[in-house]
Image 1 (cartoon, rainbow, N blue to C red):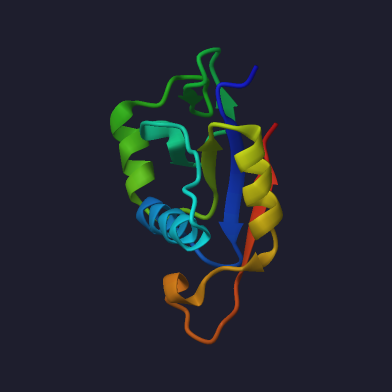
Image 2 (cartoon, one colour):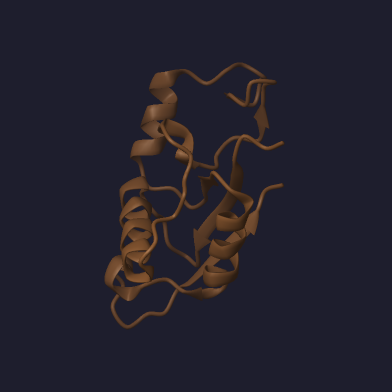
Length: 125
């Protein structure tokens, strides 16, 4: 059984911040009349900059060492291209994927008026 159902997200030629993703999820949930069921805590939304993980799911650097909390906090606080959103249920993850994959990212959030950018969503399981 999965502890969470992670999805990778990114927007064409645009870097996102964790705060922007939080706002997007909040606004979208409010508009739909139901909040997205995300994992609680720090790892609910995190940058996808790691390629390997230890048995506990902690990110490792290129040499196999656990990434420090300070480095992880810095990466989460900066704009990144790829992010992971962790949903509590498979149903919510699949609904988000079906709803948003290859759909225009809301212009009101992207700060790129007049330029349509697609949101991409890939399941990571």
